[in-house]
Image 1 (spheres, helix red, strand yellow):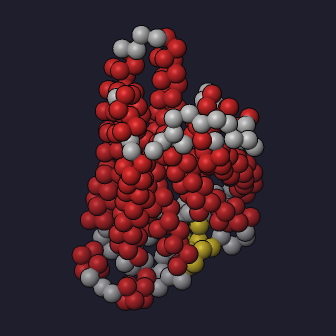
Image 2 (spheres, rainbow, N blue to C red; image 1 turned 90 degrees about the vertical axis):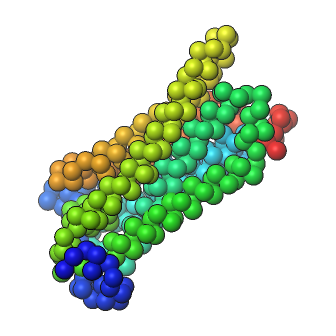
Length: 323
């Protein structure tokens, strides 16, 4: 039976063909000592992710000086990272401590949909943030006009809806795969490549489609980001003030660091052959570690955030706000 024929089946019929009520997440179950280390590591990452991202969201709302497009997008990124990390970390923590590391078929599909939607949305949002930096550095006098509130809302909404739409299509295709009773997922969570491996039909078409989607949501945003920063680099070199160059460089370097961490590991996982065991370990980096590091990267050398943190309980006089 070809994949095209499988896709024509109804969802109910497909579920019957799969004959799977639950999945077993293998993770590193053959190494109990490593499970304990991972549990502690993931718990620490999740706590720091909560503290860091909630702090950014709160101070961005409380300090009027941070009511700018940059911090609007940064707050969106923080909220997205909170959801992304919670979607995967909480179940993973429970699974690592459980003797039977199972997840229901429905639960697996829900996790797949949410994780894909949030991951794809983050790819798009990082590209949007690169454009925001381009407008700020290359067109400073027209920045507030270019990055108007309606445009920022539209770009943020587009990132979220784009992620939801692509994730829905990918999840529906995955749900239609007949598994013929195979339910052992060699991963920590329900990931599309790992689920495709369980199918008992020829999946070459779907693997090609997944590769093309990965190029669309990973390579294309990275390319747009690199183009934006090539213009930014030229503009920075033209700044006469050493202090101005340093401030601009610090702001843009933080965004590039986030891009490198997130896209670098994601591209390695989704655009490389999936037969190597280290893939599942590396996937923890862009799903759990990057959301934890984002607040630190964006705030470590950011004086505006430092001032806001020191005065988070008070309202300071506003500068020119975003309008």
